[in-house]
Length: 297
Image (cartoon, rainbow, N blue to C red; front, side, top):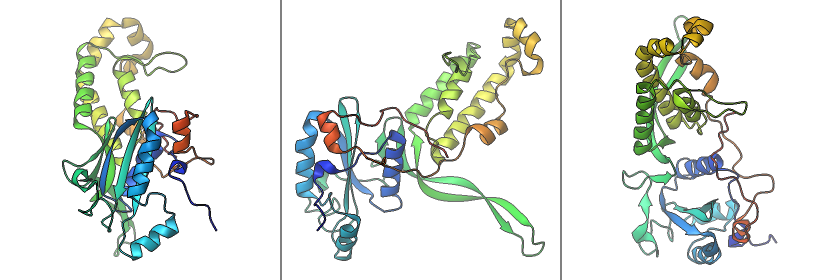
């Protein structure tokens, strides 16, 4: 007989990008749109997870969840991730009996629908949305038998930068352009700064389709705002203008950014080979880094 999983044995995603991808799949592909969540101190996690396990079937195996679903019972996931001394947590449920959508549930009054405008899941700079995106498709022409390409509008669950974050980034781009801060992308021990540094930092974000589109949008904004100021920057830096000629003060072309610096997100393992657990958070053992890690390929 398999050992029953204890609440504190639940695994923790190996980094923040894995966490975001995990939430996206649970809400999107698996349809667990009803949720509640919050932030608690590490010292309160043990008592809290014990209480949640008493209310909901969060320790059930994949096979047990399939059986529960066949009986019309709720499938509920508990996801937690530490950031500093705090723990971010989410309880995600489908529409089955005993879950968050069940009005007899203890937490039904605070549950939200991730699809609704006031119920989106937010984590740091990001918000999980059911968004429309433009995809390039190719089909074979029945007459010529040659491939024919076209753009198609599709809808999918994806993470995007919050409206407030996008506003701040746009203001940062405007400020850099107005002050002629061409800057540097950093690297080799040098700190990134100015317009180029800001753009390089944006490219290092986890490139979910929604985020990727926004990063491209910001690069285009930067290109349009910087272009009329490039010559002014060159006049202030004649040595660079003489050395780099036409490329002096230039930003990386958008086509190059798309081809080489914005790879599409691929699915990664959510948990490590020997995954950390909620028990590790409680005891203060080593847990995944709090920085967002971009994993593209």
